[in-house]
Image (cartoon, rainbow, N blue to C red; front, top):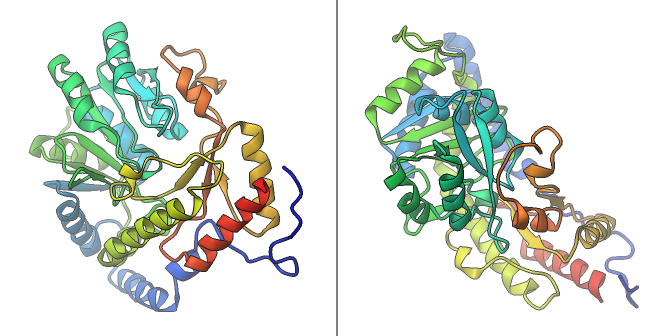
Length: 378
């Protein structure tokens, strides 16, 4: 980094938060949320109530699914989806080399063996060619493509590879509420599709919550059985993965405005693309502008060192940024011994920095982020 002859907002830097919970949970929202929580306390409907049923119905409709099954969290959703496909000890499941640890954690928690599938170096999404090789080499029972950052994974290509070989596909859509596969929303395929509603997600609860979307009636029945201790089918072991009524109430309250908020994210991503295009950083392909949920806005840097230096510079300017993800899964000590391919995942890990992204970003804030990055490279 070369020192610039000028300093941005030298007196008092603008503060640009990574998320903006203050605006998301403003006074009007809190008033409505408090009214719902008070109603739950008055009626003693703590676990399964009207907001659970309302959200499941409307979210399934929005995402193009026949069934939505609310669960306690997104990790449970991944594990239960594996349970539905009878994945267990002795089975192998393909997982992309760059993702949050929960994806591989779910595989291990059901007793199966993860096999790393390499990623596309330009996007971080699962690579179809690597997927085919790993299926052939390891006889995978299932794969778990991740819609990383909110980008749409190449599901149609993966289905052409997996369906003839009877390999199940479980889509990890933790970051993909608002993502589209062509013209159809994530959740509309014939696969099991898992969601996390952790508070930082585009559609977030006030704590942990998750869901599985599916089209198959029998799959929906099994998920309902498993999430409630196996009740109704004593041939299956279940667990406690019920979504409590208060979390469902918050999700149901947020659902009517989520399309507007996701469109704002897409507008901000387009603005970032236009304003950062002349800087010496790598942006995602413009094809994603209308398809991604833009849960995160990642930029690719030349090296992990450059990423760390830029992050520190932005911090000094009051701009929050975060690296996603700093290491490939295969480089983590707890899972490094598992097989697979990881060349591109290792090359990409540590070079990605995510800039502030929320529905409430302003053009002035985006301009300030651009100017702060420009100063770093000036």
